[in-house]
Amino acid sequence: MAKLYYGTTTAPISIDDRLLAHVKVVVATKLRRGESFTLSWVHGADEPVGRSTIWLQPSIPLRFVFDSEQPETLDQNLLKRMANDANSSRGLSLDIEIDEPVAVASPARPKARTLARAA
Image (cartoon, rainbow, N blue to C red; front, side, top):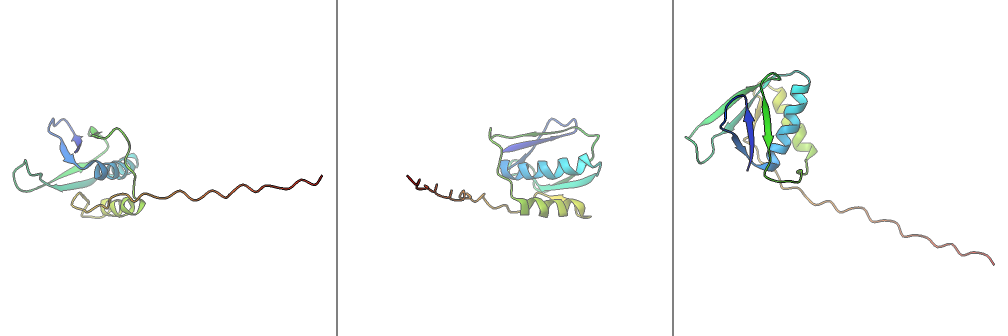
């Protein structure tokens, strides 16, 4: 599980690596534009039952820590959906389902053509 640290709180918000990779892009885009918004999530199994919401704004420290050394594959449709949520009055919620990345086959290379030389 990846971790999101916000403000001066030492307790992180635990989030799936793949989901946090998408959250990072949406949050960075919004904050770079100087736009504040809310981020909500349901508490994990090791926390009291409930949900939390934080107000994200550019002046509050934010750190993303991933378990994986390799960057996650991003789903452009999910990024758009999350960006739309972040722009809404509801704010960005982590209560969404994400699909596993689908391996994309690289396009077949055209075979090299051999040209016969005239003698």
